[in-house]
Image (tube, rainbow over all chains, first blue to last red; front, side, top):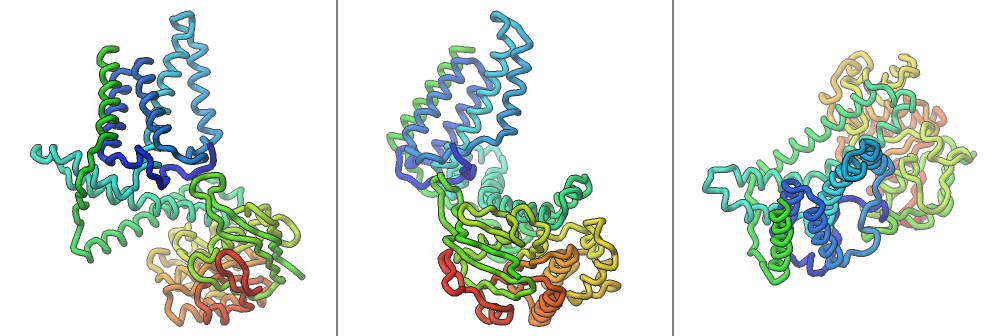
Amino acid sequence: MSRAPILRYVPGDSAVHRLWGGTKLSVLMGLSLAVAAVPTWSVELAAFVVLLLAWGAARLPRGWLPRPPAWLVVALAVPVVIGSIQGGSPAGFGGLLTMLRGTGVALLFVLGALLFAATTPSAQVAPSLAVLLRPLRPLRLPVDDVVLVTALSVRCLPLLVEEVTTAYAAWRLRLPARERRRAVSVGRFLLTAVAASARRARELAEAMHARGGPQPPQRPAVRFGAGDALAVLLLAGVVAVAVISS
Amino acid sequence: MTLLTLTGVGHVYDAGTPWEHRALSDVDLAVEAGEAIAVHGHNGSGKSTLFRIVTGVLRPTEGDARLDGRPLTDHRELVGACLQQARLQLFGATVDDDLSLDPAVPPAAQVSALQRVGLDPLVDGPRRVDELSGGQQRLLAIAGALVRRPRLLVLDEPFAGIDPDNAERILLALAHARDDGIATMVLTPDPDEAQASGRVVEIAAGRVVRP
């Protein structure tokens, strides 16, 4: 693990890279629903196995996985410690096991998101979502709006992160350490970050308006191959475990 | 007297990851106290990385960066920085608010800093930051940096997208700063702006090609 940037695409030509974006989204959604609906050890284990298989098949280079910051490790360890002193069956480990299972679900979501981002170009996300949500259109759900917002979010998030990072660096440069600790200074920084984000959003809206208003994302042909079928089969296996467990 | 010394400075972003890339290599640079220096280079030449290192925001992965003989990252308060997007470094609602972020700065110094950049303390002081034009925001950012009495003032593309009047004001503000013994460093992709801003250092592909 390294100080890798999070949620960034790693170019490659592995079996997982070649999967259709919609397949990866569906499998992730299915795994998340399965472990959320039936949070048993067997379902979690099955979901982890699927993710680990995908990780291996993605042939990602060393260093792609970001190193968790120390505060996150502590934040994860605290509930585990609390759970371990809570007792409960079996043999006084009930609390600990419950906490570990909850932490496992969180790790599963994070690993799934990282794997998806590392193997899927961001330009594929909105078009894949458009295809997946198409069946909901007859229900008069705002499918186009959801897809458009997703496309804009995926595109703008890196810009926003960069601006806030720059504003934070400027804040540290302009204010002495004693001033930065004051709540009012933190509030000023947040206001500047919000103002900068609002300005960026306005510029984006003006640019879209100048080009004739929001355009629905292009829908490329769905490439559903053998790899996609295998991924869906694996998801079906996890769902089967969940059904049996429940 | 040498103020800033960069010795063999290089920087690699995201080292040890699939996104690893080198932005600077083996940069040697010395800036004297009160000197005017301009770093000229095209987009992607490494100017922004150099800006981050010189302002102490980024610790170089290679080499040594010192200000007054001390590690630069430990003495960021001696460096004033002006970003290309000036709005990102304005943290007050009004011009006066922004200059009084640090209560240790006396009001007289705030007035002086505004006058140094050609803004009127009485007229512009009560104005909201978001009412200012892009050029005026940049002037205010320079005033905000000057008010802390830095030893070195670093500006990232200060003339980008502003009118000739405000560009002239910026050049004048830099001249005033040097009169006060503050060294100025302007990073720009424009050769004419570089010539107007002081001794030109040429940077290309992360290396100094003309010291």
